[in-house]
Image (cartoon, rainbow, N blue to C red):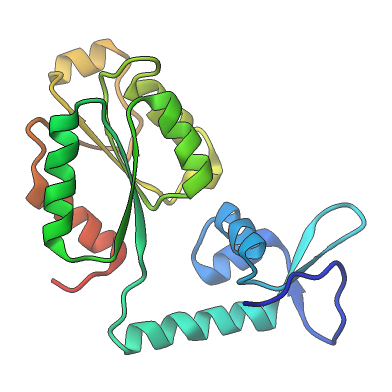
Length: 199
């Protein structure tokens, strides 16, 4: 792990969070997460802004290239938001059979989903739309209204018709919508593409 420091202790080039995210191909939120985990070296300005070491960014890029060269695949975190245990079992059974490096996190309503989203920083969210407490519509709109979550693959699974979805205000652009029962082969293809997993 690369240590996070309060000020630079050696000669190096430092970039801001947005530039670090662009270089690494991740969101600024992910950059902050990697700093907190010790994967990136940074220091904080007097104004409270992070400056990230270019050397540590290059080290991360090199590490990612080595993993790709070795045939290794980055683990994706998958958040499933579903209140019906039958469908949860369908997802878990299918995902296990794929053999991809996926870490699965569960929530049973939109409110819990947003909490888990903040805690786990998932790469993929699969959600039902009709749920108690907070439905999938509100959760998805909350996610898409936050710039930090722009790189998440959002998949909505529902028994509602297109007309019923439209009557509830529709869904933001970019959300993949499928109808129950979940078409696991199509969901697999999206996750495969997101993770760069071998076909």
